[in-house]
Length: 208
Image (cartoon, rainbow, N blue to C red):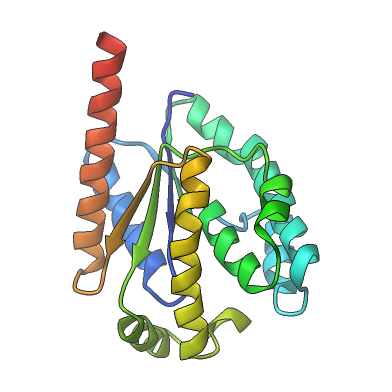
């Protein structure tokens, strides 16, 4: 694949989607042709997964999310990467190891059903202190059952920490960014710097 895959994950209400939009702008200004993807996908099946997430639970929901991810790999991510586009994915496998685990699904099951998912070139995990996340969530408004209270936010932050060693073993090049005191544009600049460093290292390796 000639195009990059960059995933951006983080707790609900953090301002992740705004940071993704700012990152897209920053990457385009740096010369990247960017395709923005979402998890679940923007396909009719992905939309159906989003719709049933309020009532579907546990392994059933995890299977639906995994099926959508593998379909997205073949119909969206790989085709764009093949023509040199940088794919910027708003929620990817890191979110699965948080939201589905919060829903009672064990790690081994998640690893099995997500086998074959495309490994990102860079996996960004956005963080912030719990109070900041709660303030941003209150400003934005609750959208799904994983965002109900401060306890859910604390649990989500804990699960992201627990997901790091699992994803590292899968070969995910993780980078955490604390956004507590950052604007979306400042967050985007840090991601751009990481992408620039990644591409420079790749060119160096190819030339050696």
